[in-house]
Image 1: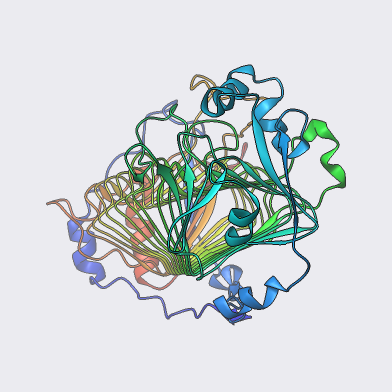
Image 2: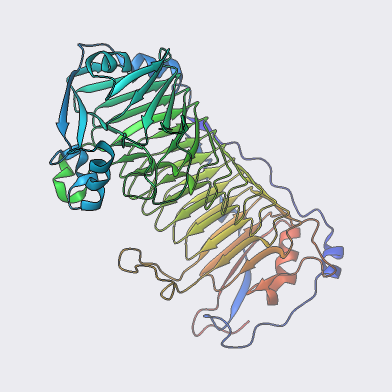
Length: 515
């Protein structure tokens, strides 16, 4: 296992006398202004904050050569044409959704059919030789066009490698790929293709059909040293590149969760650059995600043990670079560069727990650098976060957060903002996504400097602990000026921090003497 090295945390670089001269002492908030009536700042032993080094997974084995070794060889797959209705692999796109089946009926001008692979290995060359040019054709040297949905069944493998310059999925004919077995895209290109314009099927609108790739339970998906572009639209499991367990009401408990590696590749003009649902052990490594429509990388419901490392995730048009949402657990996001995304660089949302966000460079995003919403027990370590349009780090309704040695500079609001909020009026489904209005964190090491509104803003925490945090180069004539519950205690907090002591800000217990 690799170890994330902890650098010595710098002390405050401004002398205590100068700091206190710059600080304006502000009266406590009036009674009733906060959930807790009174807070106190107390020194605690620094030894209480000792933490183990963060262990990151080894990456040496995730290579293009290792993907090639996994292909194996076998007999040629059985290839058949079958109706799309009543096929388990296509049920999400047909059953109970009459408007969706009409989509393919209109595009195929007949009762919708799909190509099925079973029990063996298939390549585009084999498909072109077995199927007529109306269904699957080589339109130029090494360029293949697929004109029907293509389903890789259990026991089947689709191999698209460097013998294929590009595999094109026809927009007009409603083509897409479904993987229920094994799929390998190695040193090649896969593109949603507009045959009328003879060009990629670039994004036009969220409801406009585009080809997509979906992998179901029991599948393995490998994309290595390839370029994937112009896929996906706003329909269930049709977002672009999706790894998903089957629907819960179809007896899916007998299926293994989908998995795969996406490495050393480029993903662009995809509705969601990557999406997964109840997937395990997916590796997303050293890729370039750029100019995707909503998200760059979006692991979702109950996915586990994901590795998201070494990627460039930038220019997501509408929302976040990397977002985990709804019970994504025990995963790692490290050594990524997230910049120029529409909203946050990295977001953990709705009960994502036990995750590590470490060593990322996050800058120039339209929202926060890193945001943690309603997600407990996560570690943020050694990230560099700068020049984002909102806060450097935003914490909301989350407890047991561990913030270590982060460098947070020049963000337009606060370096770190922590808050509790009642979300009942926001339209959120509080049965599916309950939340508790609680906040607690430890902030130790690192630098909060030159953030426009100040280094820290905290309201109503259960506990906030600070240790060895440098707050150099405050903006404005007032110097370092805390807000929220820190206002009344900023002189004591700064004194303890400058002296190399640890300080906890906490509510005064009921019945205790008022400070």
